[in-house]
Length: 421
Image (tube, rainbow, N blue to C red; front, side, top):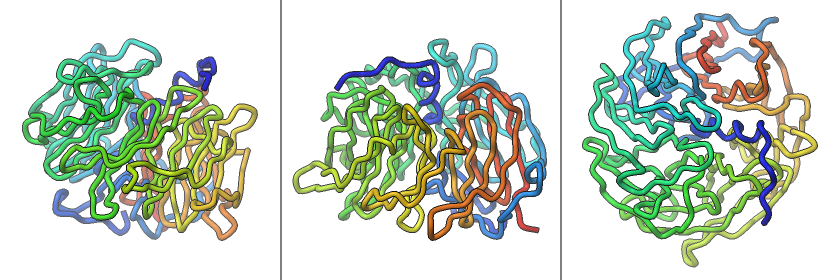
C-alpha cells in the first residue's frame, strides 16, 4: 500500500493519542471522590459515570469555574484522583508533570526528562494513576513513576536504552496502562516490542518480541476475553492482543494505514475490536479468533477513519470523527454491521467523551459542542466558542468528572461546571 504525502495538519493530528461530580465514583485506590485515573477514564471506555448533568448549556456555554494558564506546551489531558488534577507539559527544557487542587492551585511539579524538539513539540501522554503513584511516558521514551502526593520520583526507565525502543515520526505518545502489579507499554524495539515492568521498581517482568513492527501512537486497553486478560494495541502495521500475565502473543491481524499514525485507542466489545486511522485509511471491526491467533474482518469502511479524536461505544452505536480527504464527518454507525445511523459534517474534526447520555465534542480549532444521544443517532443541542486557534490546537480530549468539564489547550486548562443544579 502506498503512503500518501503528509500535510502539516497530518503531522500534528496524531498527538493526542498521547494523548485526557454528582454522584461520585468511589474506589479502594482513590479513597473516594471524583475519579478519572487514566487516559479515557476507568477501563478506558471514555464514558464518565457522572449523572444529573446539564442537558443544554446556557448561551455562551456553562459557567467557567477557573482557568489555569501555566500548564506548559503540549497535548496532554488530565487525570483526576484524591482531590488532585494531574497533567503534563513542556516547561523550559523539561517535560514536566503538574498537579493542581480542585481550586486550580499548583500543588507540585516534577520534571520527566528532556523535551521533544522534533516535529510538533509538546508533551503527549497523560499521567496514569495507580496505588498512590503516577506513571508517565515522555516524548523521548523516558517512562517514570512519581509519588502522586508529592511528585517525588520513584524510578525511571529509558525505553530506548533498555529495549532499543523506536518511536515514530512524532515521538513516543503512549498513555501507559497499569494492570495489577505491571506497567504495560510498547517500546516497539527489537529488544522489546511490548513489555511489562514492575510498577513499584521499574524492573522488567516480561518482554514480547513476537511482532516485527515498531510502535505507533496507540494508547492500549486491557480486556478479558475467553478467560484471558489481554492488552490490545496497534503497531504501525497491525493490531494485536498480548496475554497480560505471560506476555505471549494471543492474536494479531494486519492493519496498514495510508498515513503512519495508528493512534486510536481500540474499542472492544464481546470479542469484537474497532480500530481506525486517519486520512482515508478507514475504520474496521474485527472479530478475535484465538484458535487461529488472528482476527477476521467483520466490516470495513474507508470513510470511517479517525486521526486522533477517539471513539465511543454506547448501546451498540459507535461514535467517532472522520478526517477523510474531501470531507470530515462525525459519525454514528451500528457497531456490528458498520451501517450508517447518522452523519454530520458541521462539527469538523473533534475529540470526544461521553457522560449521562450526552457526547462532549471539542473541535480542534476551539468550538465545544454538546450532543444528545438519540435512537436516530445524535442531535447537537448546545455549542460555545473558546478562543479560536489554528487547526489542531485543541487536541486533548475533553474530560467530564465530578460534575466538571475539563478542556486543555496547550498552556491553558479550562474547568467548567456542568452540573444540573
